[in-house]
Length: 235
Image 1 (spheres, rainbow, N blue to C red):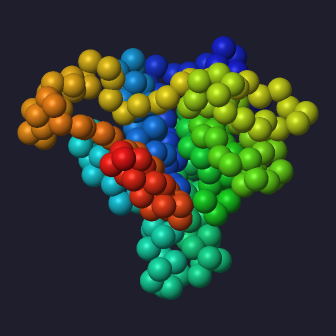
Image 2: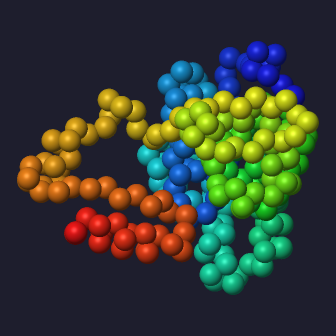
């Protein structure tokens, strides 16, 4: 395992960021937030994203190049590609990136070995500093393979405040876990004030204004939760 102290990085860094997940935006916005901070600290850094998100226009706005993989959701709905074919396609597209781009740092969000195990070769044989962004999930959704696969990484970052979530770590491996708190796309000075938000949406001071965020991960209970919240608000 490498450490940030033991690893010697060149002056011009190459950072590969893997943002492939479901239909939500969290995986992409977290890594984009990290990419922005890297670029701010080291302007000469070369960034490259691998993503399947349909919101890749966010990367275009930041002038960050990316490789777009077929969306798992769209592929499954269209029945164009079987699960096995998708896995072979992902591996065929992802593996050459390590040889061609030769990243000094790899940052992966949520999918510890890739959506279709397509990161395994890069994790096993890639000569780079590997960082895993471990967003918490329901504890019953974990399996031992995905927990133990974190041993391939040099650093695990939890985008939560310390001990507010359960983050299972691999047994028998001394992998550092860093609690980063919420990783937000915008910084505090960029956020709108309360007054500006009301002005933008033409909402009077006496009117109730709420933000209900249920994520974008396709949770089947979201609609029921929304109805429950709206019922409580109306009462």
